[in-house]
Image 1 (cartoon, rainbow, N blue to C red):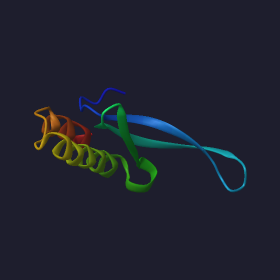
Image 2: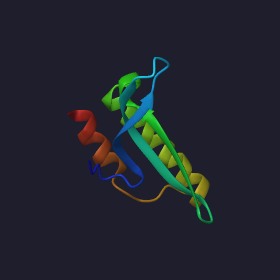
Image 3: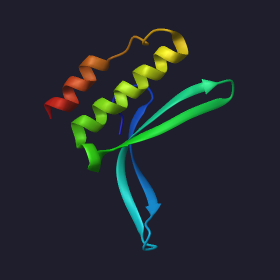
Image 4: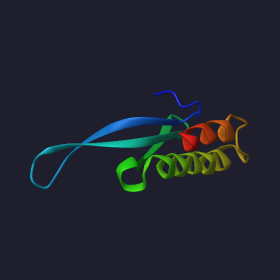
Length: 88
């Protein structure tokens, strides 16, 4: 799903529970460059935080990583995209 925010995407993660069953968890996945030939990645659970809050948290993580990487937030459509998702 294209959200219009660089480094943030909606995904489904598979994991094996303690009972041995395979479970699916919808998440917002955040990725960033963590240095030369390295990439950082984390995710925020939609089930745990809800659609809006998970997206907000994912965007906040991405903005923080941009600050660490570039010293400033990359100019993008943060407000427009966040507003559209949160209005839905």
